[in-house]
Length: 437
Image 1: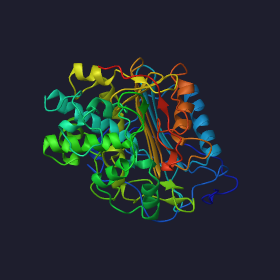
Image 2: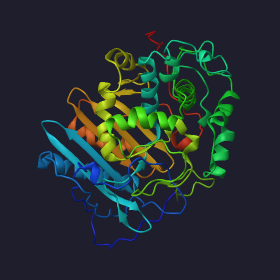
Image 3: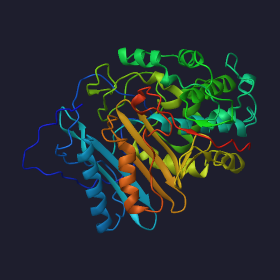
Image 4: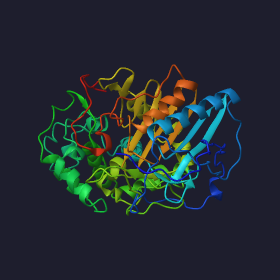
């Protein structure tokens, strides 16, 4: 469905300015945050819309990549945006020994014409899973939970819970139905995206369906798994999940703009997020929609600076013991060459991390350990004309800077997740057996 572009002079060509990395987090307003998207209808630019100049964010200028590489990246990103009608993109690329590339392109708000900037808060979707599973693994390190214990040890009421282990939940091998595929859930969310859901309500949608396969038999992406882990973390720690994450994950790494929200507000400054996840498929702003439906599986809010810190900390296990991190990184097949999945973390042709997608926003947060490179991609739309926006930008970047290690995911983009939450049943399953570690 086509949307109306923000007005721009006919003679204006896409224009991109360098945006330095916000190195002094303390100078930024807006510490730990809330989340999501909201009201106010805005139209995303169509494929022929010109891009507005990017805004500068505060910070110190790091050494840039060489000019030829910068020019190629600029051209590839702007071309991908124009082809897909992407309103705004921020790309952060840090490559020790080669330089940095930190830029924003396009519009943060198509109605006002405000430019995309590098200091904006965003909803990170399923990158949230990397935080939730890290919290679980911290409890493993403390001896308070066991990865190979059945779910029934910690929670009652899970169908087949005596045969599903915590490891299988974290590795997406439980077989439990994904509540975000349930037609009744999707209809309810579309009808009232400001509605608040409890974790138990989400599980009721999932448990109304039989399991898709026996535990450990296959790999299949399911948000149900991570909601269950969130409840286990709360029960064992005695703290709400947002508090546990704040104290044990965000604060130790000084992630001051990252939080699991308890409401629908997205902290300032932020980009408007555009989606077609509406009853009639019209593009609208989802900026303040209530993210409670995603909770432990997708509701965290963050920004470029914090995700730049998080990607290497996730990949090197900074908050875990080496033995537990080694278990996390024992990835198994998902049925797609070059891609495997561990405990709340993906390996995409050598990039360790996760992508995220929910109405209005898409994200990539990943580290390439072989080159100590970090990639963060933030996009304020999930309309996904012509394929996943985040994969399109991630591939365009990595084709230039790491051609032997492409960020390339099948469509739908969220490894196994239904694109735009559409419930079409386009699930990705891997036939590889669990490794048993």
